[in-house]
Length: 161
Ligand SMILES: [Zn+2]
Ligand SMILES: [Zn+2]
Image (cartoon, rainbow, N blue to C red; front, side, top):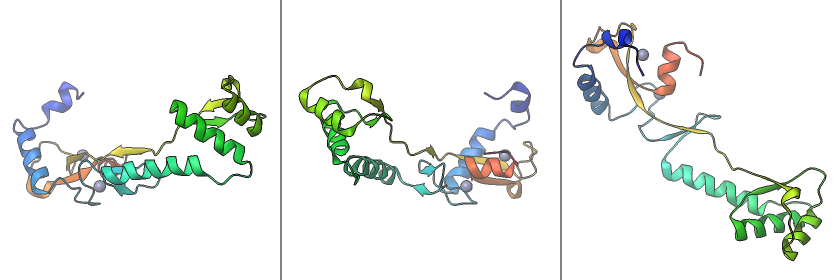
């Protein structure tokens, strides 16, 4: 939420003007080219479409379930648990993959041997904002305005990401 004070500095037609500018920029950041709705990897800053993001998650799941491990018992146990419960788990330290595998096969309680595991790709969805280059939000001269993604916007305000 904007405070009343910061809102007051924007002109009345700001919302309309801002939308018009974003539309004419094709909803792209005029600094890095990121497009509204794309996903940005928070760790690598790589941009990807939603489809690409879903594919990366699927690949990560595939890697998790098919990792080449010394003890394939672990791998087989993970697969079995995922197939039957949909849960992703990792073996707790000090526990044996073979014991886990045998417990899973025998239908015994194995909950003390594993912890939940999450496949995470840290991303942020791109939004486009209109920035006042001189940081005077009442100066809506065309030369003072630029469409930026959230990341570039923060960088332009010298803020920490
Ligand atoms: Zn950008
Ligand atoms: Zn700004």
